[in-house]
Length: 494
Image (tube, helix red, strand yellow):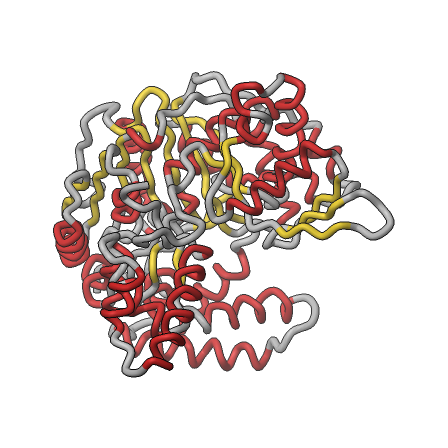
């Protein structure tokens, strides 16, 4: 059974991926000295867009940008077109065409995205993917390509090869998945945990066994699943006139995450490709999300703090004053910590925490129009390592959200559509959430910006005075939850 037919038979549901968003790509470009096109007015191409779950969410929140998605699966493209039409999106176009047949207008896209494609197509198509990306990219364009990496991918690769060998001749998707899961369950009993193969193969076998059907079929059981070393990928990109810019996750590039004894060897390398490859060896990285740009563009190997002065900062930070000192410890959602008594930094981090899930421009944190060079330098010098440690996120194009519900709360039309089926919901920060309560789902479907609290209450129909008062409190509580989840948008009249 061919791969396109498999994708038609077992659809791969589309989701937003924050690491592919033009905001992220422009942010990383800024850090490494490339003046990327502002995301809000950019043009974006996604190769292998599936049913548009990634691209449609971008188009909803960036109406002045232009989006094109292509995919070989006609049913997936039909779903994308249907959803875009229902949402009234005039800035998107979806085409049912394979990469091998697609001919983009040269230099017509500022951002090109290929998530979950490169490793899962045959060698000629991998070559064609990079050729299309290179041809499509504008002068200052940035491409995102994800792929399975070695050496970290070896254990998973061994398990995939074992499954392919054992399941030869089993072509029906359901039968193939059932037989593969049974074999993995049997294998995990042989590798219960511990050291050596028990730790590497056992852990990977358990992880693969728990994958949802679409990912299990199209990744683990795919007929093509090509992992490679980063230097090989970089050489392939160079053959198409593209150079390495950065990884989509800045924290993945941090050498200081290694044991101190290993850091000097990596830091001594003045070639970024060799440095990143050595990091992969030490970290046993198994997946990469690499950003590329045209070869010959001047880049800077080391990101400089002053570059982030044009960006915004966001983060779900908590602040805890230290006893017997004037320092405050700020903790991020990933467990990263920063302790400081520096007044400017304390105030900035407190403002970032209060603004979450919104963002604050760094120049405003430093004093706005009256910000001094010294204040900006202090702030940028602290926030760049905070970004590297995942304490804060930096943004070239921060999401527009409402932290607190306004008089007529609203969410995106996409979120309201998703609420009908109670699927995963897309936030303004290009992430997904799932609401836990029935009221939340019902409420989201009503939040089109036309209803005040009285109208919302009337729609939800309390049956008694006691229920009326209780429902009023529950609505307010639910609205505040939606705000914290980055689902509420600024009021239309704000």
